Image (cartoon, rainbow, N blue to C red; front, side):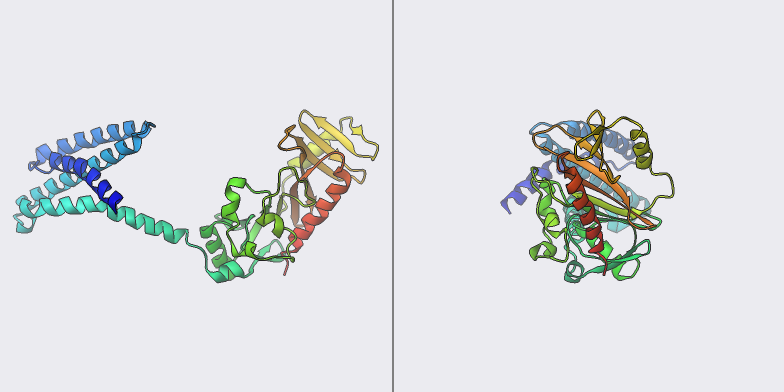
Length: 347
């Protein structure tokens, strides 16, 4: 409360100065030019203060903002007094208008700030328990799925407005629950982002989903716990199931172009096509993945991407960690688990 009182005292001084500067211009031919000049000066000063980054920048912004609010309130007060004089309205006499506008103008900032805060709280409020705990029906192509509100799941709608839903975001989770429970959730892609971003992971996992085990979901452990950088899991770290594009897949063209080059063939039959830091690895059975070698101690593995046909209408693309030494066996496990992850959503 003491801090609020100090803030009000700090804001009242520039507000009073701005108000007094324009509240006594009771001639239209004086008020309008004065208002224009004040607006131009306020814009210039606010831009100057807003561009600064020193320790007193916030203090300067507060002063300028309340000076502007005071000037605007003074301008309105003068305008009302002029209208009252022209129309001979006693209710708009200066003795009534000036104190009323002074109080309302000063309080408007706090009223607007309070309203915005309440709107923000309502927007980011947690979804209902039913939304968080239940499975929600959706459909992608001709496949029915049931989706939990879990971290790491990102959905793209198949509507005209291309709605998208990040299920660890409260507003998006609520929107998806409404859409799905109304029977209208038609998707064009389902994305699992399982490696996450460390700075965001805590926020993502604050869901009831992560408060209990989910043996029915192969991906649940990775979704709720950050994967250590030195671990090479047998599951994809990111996966997308999407409608097959009617146009030519550029990755197919890239693969065909790369296969024309001379590969390095390992003793286990793994073929390696190299282009600077990009590797194209091909198993003896024809499985093909594009990999990137970051040559970093913090990322001591290849980040590989593979795309396969899931059904005649759906494609599955996934990223995974690997090394040339374990690629043949590990990529087979990842491919199998990628399909199992999507199948776990089927009711």
